[in-house]
Image 1: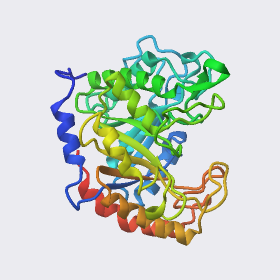
Image 2 (image 1 turned 90 degrees about the horizontal axis):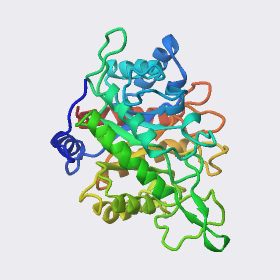
Image 3 (image 1 turned 30 degrees about the vertical axis):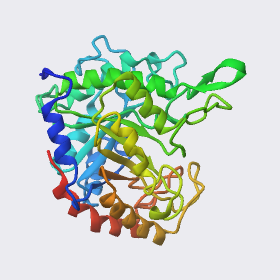
Amino acid sequence: MTRRVTGRWRTGAVCALLALAPASGAGAVAGIQDDRLPNLSGAELQERLGLLAGTGTPLTRVDVLWRRVAPTRPTDPRNPDDPAYDWSVYDQIMLGLAARGIRPILDFYGTPPWASTRGGTSAAPPPVHAGMFAGALARRYSGTWRTAGGVLLPEVREIELWNEPNIPLFWRPQCRSGPGRRYVPVAATRYAALADASVREIRAANQDAIVIGGVAGPSGNLDDRGKVCRTGSESVSAGSIIAQLRRNGVRIDAWSQHLYPIGPPARAVFFPGWPTLPRLAPMLDRLRPGMPVYVTETGYHTSYNRYHRYFVTEAQQARWLGETFRLADRTPRVVATVWFNLQDNPRWTGGLLHADLTRKPAWDTFQGIAPATATRTTS
């Protein structure tokens, strides 16, 4: 059920990336994420998939929660059919998205208790365990695997390595104690080891997979040179991760960056923002010339919440959503942009829908943009 890799750089994946990369003026694929999908099943999940499809999106991003799929340690972690694995919800999601013509990007994170000494979901896991899970994920959704009932599962080509490993909410420790009672950054080193193991396992499972690294959160800086942390939980930079991937010789196919600008999209001056995104280009070129960029989270909140004190009116959100996707079309290397999220919740108010499912003006704006980008999608 697996495909053998004949070389480190696969012709199939390179051709897929060239197909994904927009031609001059073609623009990027527009998508939206619904973070509720992994928490649903059965008829409720199908109804939710229908709501997602109603936006007209050709693309979505799905969080694969490792600790939920593997609550206990697998005996044969490379084998998706190991009894420790429970893929049932994700099988429903993948089949449902395929039936609706929506292309998924999968990211995985959430360390299981058995894969860390402290048992925390954000604990940096041993690279070998994370890598083998990444391989099992890629193998199950390689287009060659069947469920226990004999249903052929769809292929998922794009896989992100973790989620925001440069911020403590998803990856700890960011820094560790160093000389002179000072802290020094370590997240990039440990993430690069995870990425190296995951790349090798994913490519062994599906030679046509597109491996997307970084998945960097909006930490607000690009370079950690000379950085000394005040605590063990400060965010590290996207640039430090890129540099460590290069030092380790990790050959990812694309970079992922999350953008939550303060101010209008075209005038956000702090990294990461649309005007500052091109500053990544020379750094990424050291990994591979012309490396594509996925913006797999972006958005604006319409009220104060735990994670975003900055917010805008609903009318501004709609206008700036339109500007965001127009900027994505004009920004070199950007091949896909995903709005986060579909629906508001108490901790996140950047949705196209209120918590009660009534629509904000941004719904109509997104619906007027996303379907037209479906022709930019390749399989």
